[in-house]
Image (cartoon, rainbow, N blue to C red; front, side):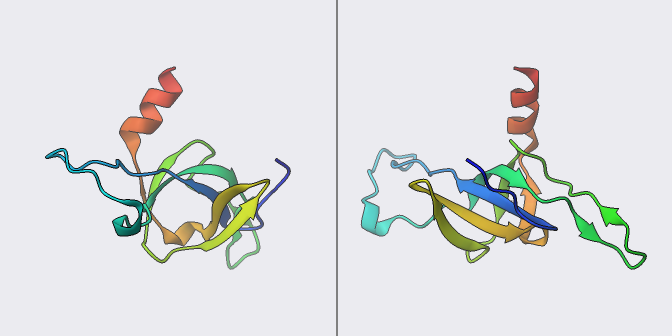
Length: 104
């Protein structure tokens, strides 16, 4: 895929939630909410500060993140659904997943 977000924007692929509850009840597609967890696929170069210097982003490609329910703009690239959002829409990085990925 050839896509590069600009400035402080990131490209995110949603990570689908489990289809069963802890009690074993299967949740139908019509009752499922869109997941608010995703994997960073591409990042921009960063935002500019007051002096014009580029501030690099805190998130990196491969990070597993949590974001708000209504964050980002949905797009489709090469048949896959993605979200484009600003880094400020990210609530946090799931460290356990990131650490396990770097160790592998």
